[in-house]
Image 1 (spheres, rainbow, N blue to C red):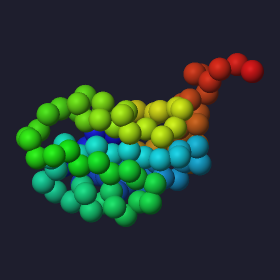
Image 2: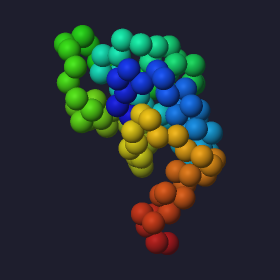
Image 3: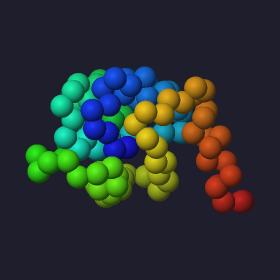
Image 4: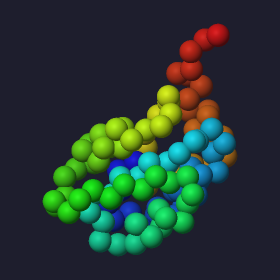
Length: 102
């Protein structure tokens, strides 16, 4: 997840992802936040927080690509930093149509 200055919503968003049983890790790539985004990320044990070096703002695509390079699982879900999941199985339900048949 690319996140820049998302402190206003990130606690709720990360909490909604953290409650998903199918999620192994949450990667947040911070592209120059000037708010409390880093502090919020550090509250969640499953968050792999990556702060990009201080070369100025790049863009969300750049941040997501950095996140892809750090993935530790076979499957990846990409989402915006301001999307909150309303049920504890939302990500699992979203992935059902793309699961391979047995």
